[in-house]
Amino acid sequence: MNWLGPESPLHLVLISLLAGVLIFIAGEQRQKLRIGINLAAAVLKLVLVAALILAIRDGRDFVWRMPLLPGFDFVLHLDESSMLFTTLSAFLWLLTTVYAIGYLERSAQRARFFGFFCICVASTMGIAAAGNLFTFFIFYEMLTLATWPLVVHRGTPESLSAGRVYLAYTLFGSALFLAGLVWLYSIAGLQDFVANGADSGAFIERRLELQLIVCLLIAGLGVKASLVPLHGWLPRAMVAPAPVSALLHAVAVVKAGAFGIVRLVYDVFGPERFRALGMSDLLAGAAALTIVYGSVMALRQQDLKRRLAYSTVSQVSYIALGAAVAGPLATIGGLVHLVHQGVMKITLFFCAGIYAEMLGVKKIAQMDGAGRRLPLTSIAFSIGALGMIGLPPMAGFISKWYLGAGAMAAGQPWVVGVLVASTLLNAAYFLPILRRLWFAPPPEQWPHEQVMNRVTSVSLVGPAVITGLLALLAGLLAGAELSPLGWVETLVRRRYE
Image (cartoon, rainbow, N blue to C red; front, top):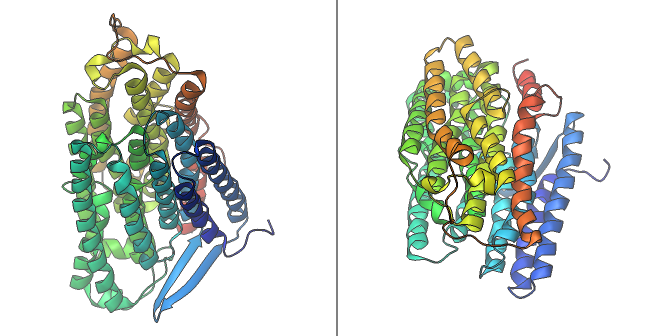
């Protein structure tokens, strides 16, 4: 491990950033070079992440600091919390890259797509590794700007309209976040993220101001985390290509907002101070409302990707709910769902893209018998859907179990009611799809069936099968030390010691 040093967090960001720049330079015509850069960078990042996991498990910490202005340091810090999000992003980036290569084989402007795709991943790595709110904000804005070209990639009037809505929401959220950040800095200075919050007398003396600051910060993060009523951009963004949808929902944008809320509660204020400010109930209420609302809206959608989009609105708020309830068990449930939801949801979007590309199927009513036509894809979709419902022993069950147990331990049994209602609604909007997939007779002709070569088919179906298998194994092997649950349990145990 001697080759790992304090600059390792910077390397995680630069690998993707440099790959994006090289892809722009390579241009549209040099396809093999572009693919090589994409895959080499993704594999290199994954190797670095694996080495960092082992080092951090052995007790090492990685901090890289660069002073920018008096009182403002640019800080990258890799610890157990940041590695949870970093590992998810690095692994799913590789699989999404493989998927996107096959998905966009016949598309124009692939160099532009993959260039911004890499910059988007670099931004996500920066968010994961940010050591304070200032650094977090820099990468948070970088993510907004890098993702917009992906949302409007098709260039259709619908996608351009969705891009305008996306920018309006996210830039509004950024303005709120920046206002809260500047106000907090004027009170307490720029604090590095510290487990259970920084120790500042100002956090005690100015209660009303801090409550307003928290509202600004939560609202700014809530746009990307799709908290109701700040969620409107997400269903509109489903006009983007399937790899972008997968990236938005499982790895990058919504996870950036949810991870930011986790950082704010646990590493800026600390759970006890956050609760003392009276903000835990507010956040829990917003998360519960979003969970139920997103599920109800998903039930009403007939377009497959829009149903999955509203499912994301609901499911991501489990992370915020765990942070609001706090306590060891609820914290475990919220943090592990950051990984579990990512793996399950990317599986579902991969499969939705395959149905659309291979069969022309975009509406739920068109999915009759698709399980017989695309069995591997449909098995992966079924695993993801059953996991979202929370059927044992899927990954989603683990998250909900810990959230429910944590709520009971914290004296908040109403949370269990929210989880039960959400589970029933999840079943109501996923089980009819599975019935169509496996039990309805197939049509005489699919809407727009395409015959794809073997390489393209493997490039599309392979990642979906892998993530579906991971969603299953995350539940079956939850007790393993390096499983998502095992890693989170170790992290939380050390926080609450």
